[in-house]
View 1 (cartoon, rainbow, N blue to C red):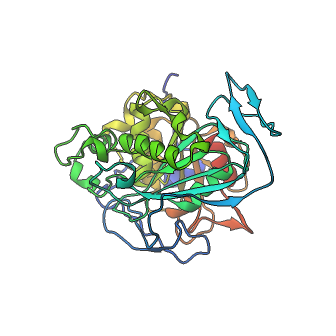
View 2: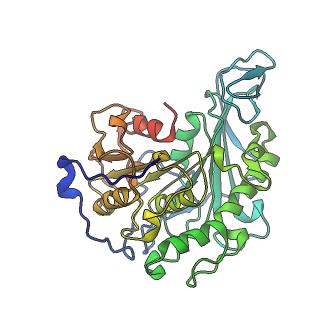
View 3: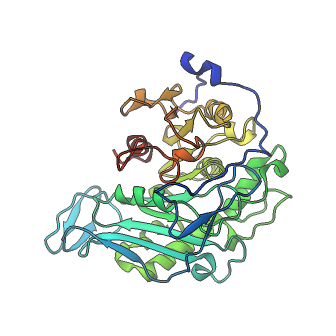
Length: 380
């Protein structure tokens, strides 16, 4: 679709600055003082660096899933063609064309394993990688690849966010990847560093990331390992010709992971891109490139209490995301069809609040931002 520049809504003009944000100091601190932790059996550490969300964990690696039983259901859901469902047993469930998932024992499946368990060739970023699938939910037939913030976490991603997405019907994985290089060291080509971390191909002189330690390879190796651990999840569906089946994958992340998700959407035709508390790479060339994923499949979400908020708004404008900045508080989807979503909801950590868990506000047991996430991830 044609890309046309739009300006910030009047209500947000005070926060919409064209001033460049120092990308060398875009750091995040995550605390572990809430009742909804991001990872199982974790403690939290602060790492200095760019837009960092770093979590340490005492959870041991595992080759078997943990699970939570759901309502009784039997059968294997088999999808054939577009939105056509064939079932065996007693289950009938409307699903898009996609993986053949065994729902005969409905439950929440959760997995944790080291990066080098999935791929012995892995040598960098060897933390615990998480995955979730909830077979009690109507399945979306799509995979969310969720990228953590900057640093070198012991446990990668957010368990709380992954479980929330699994409850919406997504397959979810959280690969560990190299994100501790400091984007300030990448000069005027931060996109080159992020692309090398994604592809494992030389794009920038400052970093050296081989293919086994790249995001793209990690996704494939995680899916292969999950297929061996849990063949009923048909995780291998999301691999095509040895590569991720990007057309059925939502690439998403928070902070550093949000910016990296944007770069991936620029260089691969993915199902959609969901960027939480990002992107931030203000005035970088990649933001104004021609994306392989249509720009109307990119979404951004930012909190006004985040010190990086002005930079997020500028990046939304540089990317020409659809619509004007729209405040979601007290509103319902589709938010005037804007893909530049903004909140001022009460929280102790605006930057971390845009993902489930941690400081994300709740109304009772329900996340306040659940309707926002449903709209962004396409689970309405």
